[in-house]
Length: 334
Length: 262
Image 1 (cartoon, chains in turn cyan, purple):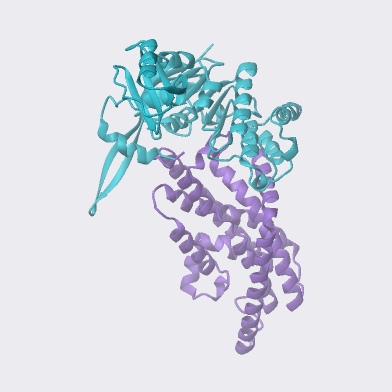
Image 2 (spheres, chains in turn cyan, yellow):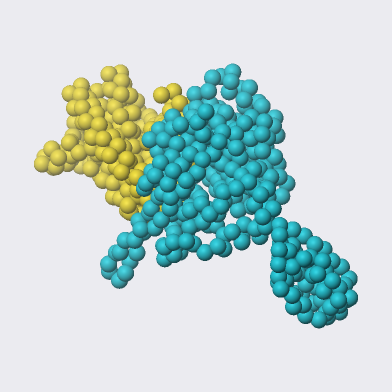
């Protein structure tokens, strides 16, 4: 069976015009600089990267909105930008910052309209809709105009709408942006459920480490328009687990700590946060030293959060044409 | 095709949320029609004519009811397209199995039909109050019903093109303003083409503006078959030309920069 998504050396350049006095100068910005990727059916992939890394541009190419400058891609066997309408019936897309619901009408009407747009048979539509209403708990606000919904309710309806035509692949571009902790958790669970139980391939971008951890099994990090990391989420975490974070509270001011492989992250009053590289120094030695330099009131040892792992990957320097990158941020930023 | 029809219906339902706005427009319609009734009364009296440009005072007011209803029912097509392009919301539209231009056409036409119907009803009530019923001519009414959708479609193609200009221009409101004023003046919203100087009439009759405003209104009040046929041809040709231009421009536009966020 063909892959859900495959891209080979996919690239997109934008022309950026700049005014220099009275003259316009054009420069080319590489938003996506040769991405090669393949995603099997049924996988759940988090596609992450800092602002301006080229995430949205890639999604837009894979959904057929944008024509690439070079390279190839197929989604479910279709070339997206050539067979946009045909592909559209088989994929679902949610842009967290945009709405596909009719603002003045209740979600029920949008469902109805989408069933016509996607040419879904009446009985299939009704059973699919009722199932989504139940699973996404839409019943209580199904007849309330969208403008009166909370963001959490709206996003649930948005995602449900994008699943109405039973897509085989769903692209989610920051679906949890702006949601509170509970709403976020609910939405993640639903996306995961659709992936695990219905076998929908999930392609998700997010800035939220929780989204990645809970929904995706594989993470692809892009930066400066290129793939910088492509691995299982669990493995990425483990790789960085050689680092530990120690929070220590002393009774009074301790002596300063000077050990190879120990970095002071934060210091406030008598409380300290140390980062320990356990490959450079055994944790036991560090503990002994911490006990020695003062009287410890409280201590906790943690793994670095996924967020820090990501930040670490992001901060890796670009490998090519650095000049272009700043401009790209301006062109692509939300 | 049925999906576009359904989009138009949904747009009408959505538009009903703005009844207040539509209502306030009809007050304006009342004022405009009253003022022009007074002006034309004076004009007919001063010139001692019963017919100006082939229309009696009664016909003139009914002509105005139609032209004003057409102009005032205009949805903000160019602004919608401009916004979609500028904010990147166009992306949301492109991930559906839909043609964006046809979707826009369906959406704005639904809105326009509703708005026109309301304006026309209110305008008719005003005309009935002041000048009484038009000698109803079923032939004229049938012609009008055929020309009106084409008039809306033609108007749409031009506004859609102006909206697409947002791919290249910083601001399209200037173009919208120029075009809308030209439709009003050169399309014969206030003064039928017959009252323009001879030389002008020749030009105005081939420009698209008259096919949008003057044509349907004149057919409505006179039921003139010759006029109907020439307006029909003018509309069809203009729509085909502009649709072709849209096709070319739209395809060019899709390949252009899409750096508008998100």
